[in-house]
Image (cartoon, rainbow, N blue to C red; front, side):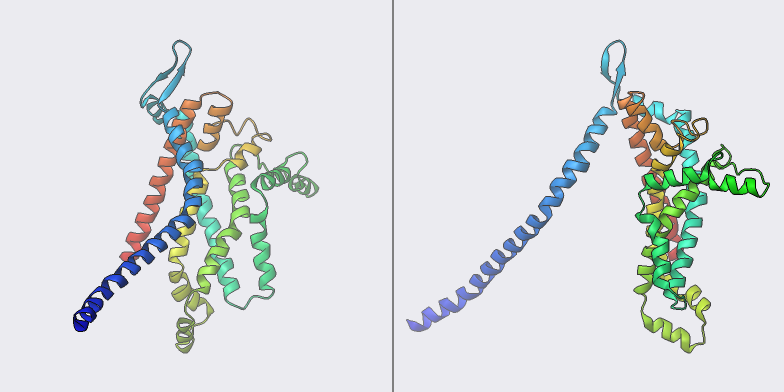
Length: 313
């Protein structure tokens, strides 16, 4: 009788351990959901619901006769043939092609210089490059707007003292370059920090092997550091795609200084803002915003696809 009882206890022991393991797993899952829940609430309230509402608005049109009517994809069809929107998209695409490579090259050189250990006062140098990123973009645009001023800016005054013509920073031919200079000044330090952090993760064994082979600092940077930075550079490019097509603060503030150069459709984001809050065309502004988001997704995917394909080849 006692032997049979022991056998039953031994047979039931694994099932009890399995039950405790399952209860422990359910408890861990509940803890995980509890941690994620606050983020999901904010994510849904601040992103999903506004996007859904904007998508809803983009399907309607406000008409003088009939009021708000369902228009289907009418706003999107209008946006695809809107010359002001297309000009704005082309302008920021040109801005991205010219400004982003310059900014990333400066950030890369700065990160390599700091990581080399050969730079004196490296901490002060790093802080000096990163400091403009801590300046709000509104303040940066106001500051550079003052510097660009033809009548009161220090560059114009210096050129006048030297007997030279004043630089035309706020004219139509210079404006895109002037905005690119402001954005480069603001975000070079941000990208430099990303690249420098990636450099700190490169195994030192590779540096020691390169030193044994007689590689100098430049050869080590070219053959080891820059290839190791490809994923970080890709992240910087993706962030730059998003930032370039969302360009807003700088042209919106520069518009006060050069209203004949920067109109309400200078960038797509500025155009959507003007439609919604000046033209009271909320429905069309929502459609323009969604199309701008689609352009950003396509451009980001194109960059990711090209870089991934090149790394595989």
